[in-house]
Image (cartoon, rainbow, N blue to C red):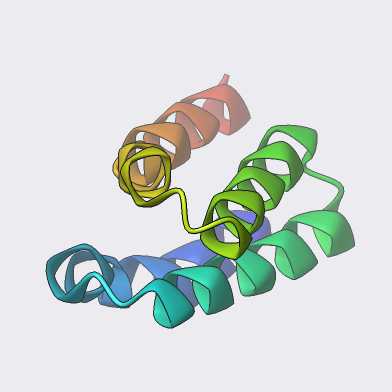
Length: 84
């Protein structure tokens, strides 16, 4: 299940990703998220992952950080949708 993968593989390292602000790590995060989202066909997260990769590729750091900071809320919203 998508949420279990997110909880196990993405959320534990998320605060370090934001804290360290290493663009290569952020891009890797985006690529992995994109891959998992495509596998589970979660369109919202596919778009989100694509944006992260695009911002990292173009060194648009402010957009990248602003987008990444939305991740916990996006996951929280997805969890609510799944429960309903």
